[in-house]
Length: 155
Image (cartoon, rainbow, N blue to C red; front, side):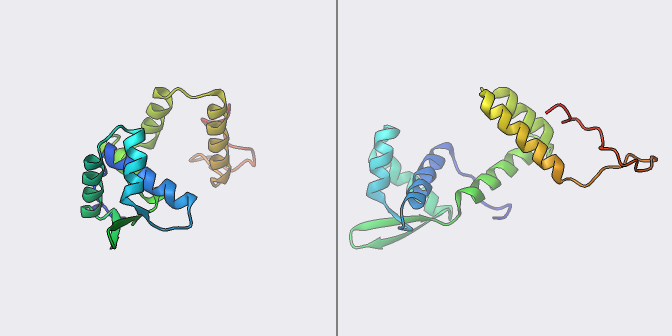
């Protein structure tokens, strides 16, 4: 995905999540418009027309592919969920947080209601990432062989 990837609205994300959920739970690579409408009219209380409009927008934006088979329309994602999340996350990082990941992560963590298990999971993630980093030698000091002091030492 490039910088020209079209934004996906909140409502369109709901549609895409249904498409990805179907694709991951099924061997089929495409889902009918009727199935998407059935899922979203029950969970989102949207009319079938609203869902069809969202599907049309996603096709126009190049996020969904579709093909007509008889009187049915079959939709499939052109991009994986991971690709779209990566793009949206990068957009947030660069447009809202000026490319600074620490303030972004701090905001996300502080504004979320994390459980103890989720906090432990983040702690483990940071520890694992830190262990993959090359050893750091402060400027002007020789490497003493000791582990460097870090901001995540207490994790």
